[in-house]
Structures are given as C-alpha cells and as structure tokens.
Length: 131
Length: 347
Picture 1 (cartoon, one colour):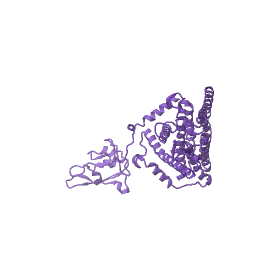
Picture 2 (tube, each protein chain N blue to C red; picture 1 turned 90 degrees about the horizontal axis):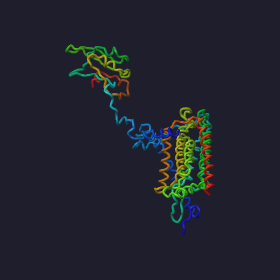
Picture 3 (tube, helix red, strand yellow; picture 1 turned 90 degrees about the vertical axis):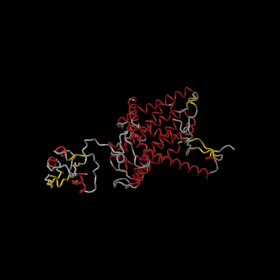
Picture 4 (cartoon, chains in turn blue, purple; picture 1 turned 60 degrees about the vertical axis):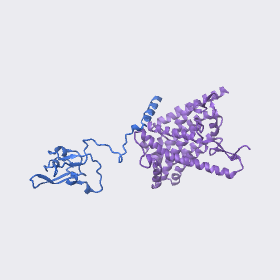
C-alpha cells in the first residue's frame, strides 16, 4: 500500500517540471491550426474577379442552408455571383461547399475567432469573403 | 545586571507594547501566509496537472489573492430565510478564531535581549502549551457543526455531522501520538520542547539535532496523517465533499462569511504545519537566523499537504472511520506503551 502511495506522489511531482505544461497562454500565444482546419470561408479571387461561376452547387449541398447565391452575367458574358452571402450563425463548418465546388472557388481558412457584437455582422457578403 | 524576563518585570508599558506588537506581527504574517497559501496551492496543483494556475493578475498571478478577497468582499451576503440567524453568523467566526489563536503558543525564534529585558519570540509561553493546542483544535469543530446546523440545509447538516464524527475520532489519535513526545520531553511548554530538540541526537551524535522525528518516527507519521484529517484536508475532506454534499457545511454561505471558512481552512493548515515543525522538527532551530527556519519548515509542510491534495482521491466514509479507530488509535496507543517502556528502562 505504501509503495502505491509513494508512486502516486512521485507521478504528481514529476508533472511539476515546467516542460510538462500543456496550457497555452491564449490571447498572447496562439496555437497554429492544422492545414485542413475548417475555419472562416474565403472566396478565391482571380485577376479581376472571384473564381466563382454561380453554379448553385454549394447552396444545394449546404446542410445548414446558410449560403445565398444570386447569379448574373457580366459584360464579357461570364456567369458570376451578383450576391454571395454566408450566414455564419447558421453555418456548421462542415466543408461540404468546398468539396462540392467544381472550380475550387471557395476554401476554408484557419480563422476561428469569429465572435462579434451584432447579428448583422455575421452575414458575410461577397466583399468580406473575398478579403 | 543580568537580563530580566520582560513579563516578570515592573515595566508594564513596555510589556504591553511588545505584546501588542508581537500579536500584530504574528497575525499579519499568518493572514499574509493564508492569502498566499491559496495562490501557492492553485499554482502548485495547476503545475501538477500540467496547467499554469493563475497568470493574469500581476506577475504570474501574484495579485490573485487580493483580487479574490476584493471579489468576495463585494459579493452579496445571503442569509437563508429559514436559517437560525445568530449561529449562522457566529459559525464562521467560531471556526476562524481557534485556527488563528493556536499560533499564540508557537515559538518562532530565540529570546531577544533588548535593554536588559529578555523578550521571547513567542506570543505567550504557556506551560501547558500542548494542552492549549489540543483544546483549540477541539473548539474548531463547533464552528463546523454550528454552520451545518444553522444553515437549515440537508447538505450542510450532513457535512457538519460528518465533520464532528471525523474530528472527534481523529483528535484522539492525534492527541495520543503527541503524548509520546511529552513523555520524552517531560514538559508541555512548546518553547522548552524546541530547546530540548537543539541538543545533539540522543546526547550521542553531534552532527544531528535531537529532533523528535528521529526518536518518534511513528508518532510523526501518525500526527501528520491525523492532523490532515482534523483540519479537513484532502484526502479526508469529507465534510465538504463536493461530489456528494455540494460543498458540505459551507453550502449556504456566501460573501465574506464564505471567505472566513476558506481562511480558517488555510490558517489551520499553517498552524498544523507550525505544530509539526515545532514538535517534531526542532521548531525555529536550524542554520538560518530564528524565524526563517520555522518559516521554511511551515512552507515545506504546507506544500507537502498541497502535493497530497494533488495526488490522492478522497477516502470513503467507512474507510475513514476504520482508519481512525482501528489503525491510527491502536498504533498511537502501542507507540505510547513502547515509548513508556523504553523511557523506564533507560532511567
């Protein structure tokens, strides 16, 4: 019995070493997220406009129904999204929109600090998603 | 002119002044140690669980005790409608006061000679010091039982009943384990016990002091474990077992009253460490000047108690009672018998 008690004490004493600490001092020190982390969406731009061709595959596949797309045609005759909006309050960050996209126009970044003060601020429009 | 003991002299203003000064110094030091014991505990247990503990308030959270105190001070003070008001208010004081006044008999340094007066570095050198300590330990129970009863809450009541059973059973073993100490020292005064421990070990080995931990290792272990149980520290913190009793006897308390329970817990821990250091580890004697030695020993024991808290799970109630009555009590009694035999045979 005494052996077990002392073994227990030794285990906790070993954890005292500063190298054992797993806590990260969050706001000052941040962990690097994994490459495949599913954070805030980003619309991929080309030279003059977004890559998106407004094919409606992402709003179709979206299980949370958080993506709004309105298609239009520009002067070159290309199809482009006049409106592309993601409601982050509904989004579940499943990444299906990225998987569904045939032209790789949408991707997910590592941004995870998405708290905000107003409901309107969670509606990410095309301009915000292109940043 | 030979120096005169200040308490026996006719210079009463000086006597009164030094007494008040000593009381103030000891009280303030104990309060500060209580405050920083909470910080130390959070830090130590945090690191043992590979966390950091408080880091934000001040450098490495050093201002955390002050922030906690301020927060508790400004919290709403709730007295339950069905509670008995007077005992409810009295209970936190009754648990706090015995914890603090036990410090009065602990010597923390050699005698000072100032102006031909001997001033002992101890608030009062009672010739029944150990009895006084045991009496104060006994008084400490009333606060908890009263808090449990006055709250008019089943969890508090269960906590109070448990603590009375626990403290009564363990007080016996703790008291019996110290008896073997004063069988050897033949005095109950803590100052004399410390002086006796400064002599060479058994009068033979000059490189070791005559600390009673060498002569009475069993009594030392018994006293450490039973005093852990008596001050309701883990692994014997059944009176406030949060997984069973919400938080036991202090369930209904809030604000500064709750803080008093907390302070009493840590003050008890410091007092018990001081007593262990004084009775078994030579008190203030050691390589450093006076009070630094006993401070080191106290902080060492406080850290050991925190280490225990970080390691062991709580014992079950039947295990607690079994250990108290069937293990520690017979061991303490056997220790007394053996010590008595050896003392008689060596005479």
